[in-house]
Amino acid sequence: MLPKRWNYKPIPEDQAVQDLMRGINASAALAKLLVQRGINDFESAKSFFNPSLRQVHNPFLMKDMDKAVSRITDAIENGENVLVYGDYDVDGTTAVSLLYGFLIEHYENVSYYIPDRYAEGYGVSMKGIDFAHDNGVTLMIALDCGIKAIDQVNYAHEKGIEFIICDHHLPGNSLPKAFAILNTLQSKCEYPYKSLCGCGIGFKLVQALSLTWDLDKEEPLKYIDLVAIASASDIVPMTGENRVLTYFGMKLMEKTLRPGLAQLLEGAGLAQDGALIKKELTVTDVVFKIGPRINAAGRMKHGSLAVDLLIAKTQKQAEIPAADVNQKNSDRREVDLQTLEEALEMIRGDEAMQNMKSTMLFAPHWHKGVIGIAASRIQDHYYRPTIILTESNGKASGSARSVLGFDVHAAIEKCADLLSSFGGHPAAAGMTLELDLIDAFKARFESAVAQTITDDQLVPSIEVDLEVNLDQLTMNFFNQIQRMAPFGPNNMTPVFVTHNLKDTGRSKCVGDGSHLKFEVTQEGSGHLSFGGIGFGLGEYEKQVQSGKQFSLAYTLEKNEYRGIVTLQLMVKDIRFND
Image (cartoon, rainbow, N blue to C red; front, side, top):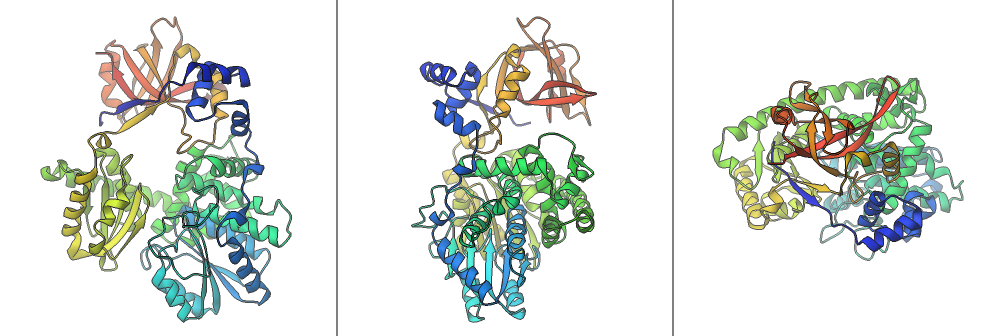
């Protein structure tokens, strides 16, 4: 396991902590956590702990929103055929489900289209436009894609089709000639929150349409569960409007599961008879239980399967797509593990690659649907910018993942002349190129990374919020921490460090031997002990059992077994005192 750097967040000024403790009657530890996150007074704490839909911004502050609403309204009044088009990942399929689900309630001449990951690739495709033309569509609404679809939008114009683009990806130097573009990152867009996901942009459009059509103010909220799933799965900042929408989306899922989600969660062991088994659903449940299943449809079969599932009105309608999606997720896991092992073997057998600042691997038989997952897994092992490539439609198709603080999209941009297409974010990107240019791309990308990446960026790190003692870890403290949810980027689950720990004699490896189950006590804490689990920390079993003192970095989780509720440590890393 790679050694990690523990980055301790600055300890807030004592006066600020004391003021907040008095202002909201909080413990010192909770006050410190809040001040670290910029929550310094009663009003900001009240807003943070009590999310309100009043904190959601007016959708018409978004550039081109009035134009988009006007065009859709005209299309309906004129009886035009409208096509809702979206990407095949979680963000895209939830966005399509949201907007299509809303429009079909008010207008019958609307359909949806998800491009085939393998036949069409990412974004707006010529094939999708041809499909629209063949079916008499005159208005296409692209969700979670389209901001760089200049040629495609021009092609659509030639066929008499107008575009509304709802995207959250970085715009290029030029924009498509769409009728309206909803993207908070475009110039001259004064929308106050810039980090919505694609489904979030779609939600703002639904809000604006509801206001214009004088619908019940609760109408858009029927789809807020989809925004929560997309926001959590797309790893957007869990701040501001994203946090509010996710908070209420999670509450909706806890109260009423749409039929497709109920059956997905039954497959994950989190629901039964159409309802949640647990009282509270967490972002972790969404990211690891719901998101991968929705994604599996596009990875292993077709993204439209996910939309079929999410828009199902009854349990009966959801049965077939749910069974298919759950099966595809099982298939995806098997292919994922095989790809990872092959990729690791390639690196182990190449000494030169082991010493590079980046990783780029290609195998023509790898499944295109899992190369993004493989890139993330390889990055976990070697912690450097990583690109995994496979062959698709006679070209190399790849997925990139970065390390904290390094802009992988900028590095790929330096290779633009070698690529047929590329796009993405600083943390992740995708690209296609000719097969005979792979070696040149590998060399150029390595050079781009080596010239700009720092040594610190090549060391994985854990951001530590606070040092605490075991006797501070009470259920009341845990419940206070949980009120800070939903967690995500810029509002991560707090990480704690506790020093001077020793094994009680009961710590041992579990599972296949790669995981370490802890039971620890702290010097000076009497007989108080805590259990925990450290995934991937099995190699430290003998050192832990030797009696040495150590420190743990961990998050807290509630564990229920046979009706007994306890706190356990979810251990992220270990350090021995020597």
